[in-house]
Amino acid sequence: MSVDQIQSTGGEDEGAVAAAVARATYPVAPGYRLNVRSGPGTSYSIVRVLSEDARVAIGCQRPGERVTGPYGTSNVWDNIGGGQYVSDAYVLTGSDGYVAPRC
Image (cartoon, rainbow, N blue to C red; front, side, top):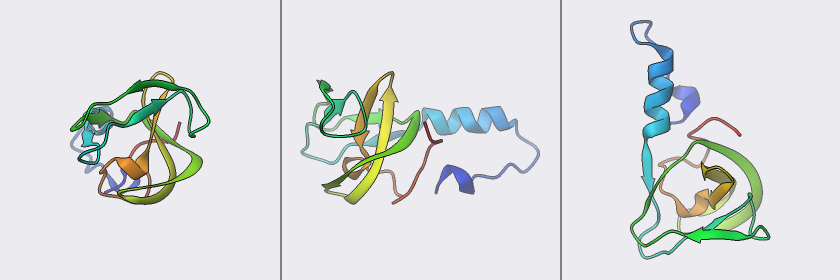
């Protein structure tokens, strides 16, 4: 499900719905130590490396370099913290598109 598909029924606080989406975490592909980069592409510097079996909270997403990984080929990059990006092709979000707001 994408963020665009979440609809308010009028009974809940829309801010609470957005906060719940922001708190969701997603698993990194099994067996991978994933490079976290300073921007949305492999030419950006590596700022840290996630351990195997890591989970990430995606704050926002933006287009960048097209990368092929275990979950297909994608140009979507996930912002997992200030200046920290991972390719969505290595994160199991359950969607080929955006699951968080665009950065």
